[in-house]
Amino acid sequence: MRKVLLVFGTRPEAIKMCPLVRELQMRPAEFECVVCVTGQHREMLDQVLEAFGVVPDYDLALMRPGQTLSDVTCGVLQGMGSVLDEERPDVVLVHGDTTTSFAAALSCFYQRVPVGHVEAGLRTHDLSSPWPEEFNRQVVDIVSDYWFAPTETSRANLLAEGKPVERVWVTGNTGIDALATTVREGYTHPELEWASGSRLILVTAHRRENLGEPMHHMFRAIRRVMEEHPNTKAIYPIHMNPEVRAAAHAELDGFDRLHIINPLDVLDFHNFMAASDIILTDSGGIQEEAPALGKPVLVMRDTTERPEGVEAGTLKLVGTDEEAVYREFSRLLSDSAEYAAMSKASNPYGDGHASERIADVLQTPSSSADKGR
Image (tube, rainbow, N blue to C red; front, top):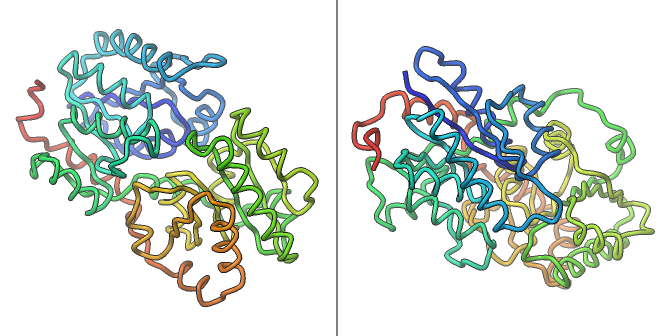
């Protein structure tokens, strides 16, 4: 039996790690599964844990008002040291590109505990975009022992950086696994009832590099387009960041066909995606989830570490310039052929069995990584 410690702390990580927790727990003869959450996010993290029925064994409870990235990094490093001393796991799994993942992987490196990186190999090759996520992801890949790449493109990135070919596996993305649990037939919600009969636009925006003028440009463009298309309604589950909220209210208040609502839990949000017609976002995870649901996505960022969706045609990178967002959003609403092409594009991010593939790898490991550093 192998002891596997999974560490995560934000809502996006939890959405993608909880299916893996459940898969490992379904193999009690092979794995002792231990879960540590850092609480980098709090309320949003707890909502995901509840939706998937995952109860952490450790909770570092790091979230503080006004916390900085340095605060989170130091808190995870200090807290993880004690957890690793207590558990002495055979491998620690971290996910993606968060500060939690970076600091947890670094703590493991210091204690010579093998690291498995779920969603390894995504790259923009620009440390400023997304910031600080591109840095975090690259550093986690430097110290890892197992690289679970979601796509062939991610695998190619890792091999180009010199990662050993026998330790890189293409698994698909565990975020697609999550949809099998969360998206439900017959789902209803008052906001979806309000939007019934209209073309539903789902909006999310929260990235640090978009704060300030870029976010104002995005919101102005969305409002302009919707004013010209009265058959649309939009729902914007707004992020808790006060800068995001200030920009949204400054640009969108008073427009009665766009509802700004509080953040949704993962079950609600995935079902809102399934009910939508178009998604405008600067999120990373939505770029993977929406294609699995056949939803066209306009990505309001200048770069993406998920080029597979752009190449497949289900995502379009539109940046944050007001006129560019306005132009592409207008086209998608007006051009039925463009809409059909994006909504019917193939999903490059997996078939919903990524967690099984990761568990299979960990169940029969080669000896080299087991020995640690």
